Length: 242
Image (cartoon, rainbow, N blue to C red; front, top):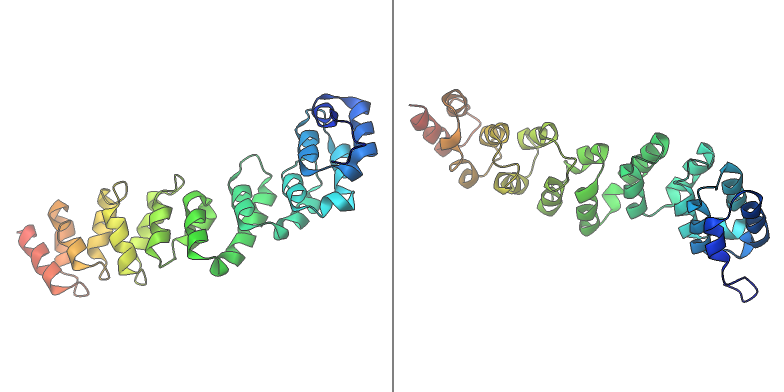
């Protein structure tokens, strides 16, 4: 911060109210750093007028950290906030898509932007995203054939059984992904998941055979009669069904 700026300015920005806050923003905004902007935005007396003043300073709007702060502000006009979304990094987009305090329109815009970028993300980035993805993004990541992404997605607290079942039932799912689901402590022990794994012809035989004894007889008969499934699995299911 330039030397002519008061040392206690940031503290004052976070605590003063009314006209004094407006005065400080008008006088010093052109010299603000991102931490100063954060102090203003966290001030309970910060209103739409002040947020508009911050948005109107070209130097501030050129700073990525400031744009990432402003887009979360309900006081910022919605159209302006939506315009800031495309320029955000994937980590901030992921945070926006998952934050319930953020306006629904902003969350949706962040999800759409992430969906567009998903194919270009590295495996490690997709893994990190999978652990905290919003429900809409979970659907897209569920189509990922990489076992690492699948393993991370299974750790996501937002994931539901209704989302896992279509993956393990899919004709295009990777056998490696099915192996990950079957061995997962949380999901591999659920009965509907076990049935779906056993009935999917793409499930590796070594994964299915230990699960078959855990199925009920009607489900065993369904496996035994499905000609798409490996012969060894069908014979074992037939024996277990009696």
